[in-house]
Length: 226
View 1 (cartoon, rainbow, N blue to C red):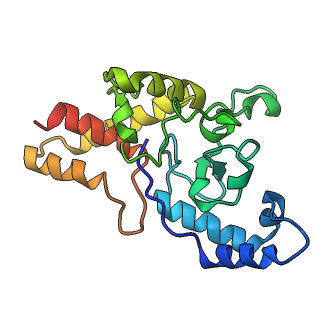
View 2 (view 1 turned 180 degrees about the vertical axis):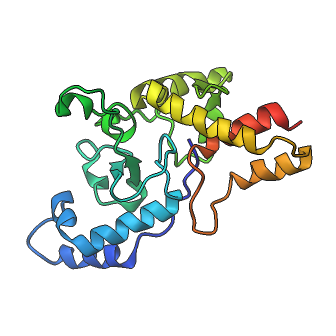
């Protein structure tokens, strides 16, 4: 999980909410979804803010492969339904095609869709927490594990479970990303590896983070940087 620094909401979103206040129809998520231009402005702003990776697992996302995510569920926190600070973008989190029926193989198995309406302010590790990365460890085989810090373990364990962050699909994707970087650093000096690790904390020239950059940076820091 990588920290997401929230910015300002798009002006079109602010203006639309202000205009709606003077109308009979109340502000709702449904009416927002109908405003295609405003909706797309918000979507694009969130994608840029996250560097085009999922707010939870860190895989690459686009408009077509993601969905709006309410950190605090809209069914419970109704006053935050259209609050930009509560909006994120999550991957669709569907399982890979297993040859079963379409309904079965598309069952959400991780991130926003499996999280659903769950939220616990004490046990949910939020990507809006500047220290969210400190709650997790990673192995070279792609596992995501809770930190050794006893004060953070309960939240880490619960978040991994509730978001399905250590399912085989994600573990394999992280392992592939890590393996690719390990091949790339072969022959590099310690200083060059250090620079490479620092690079994963920054987006590229197009504003995109490397998928699973949190896991990659952790492995490089743990095993190759003293």
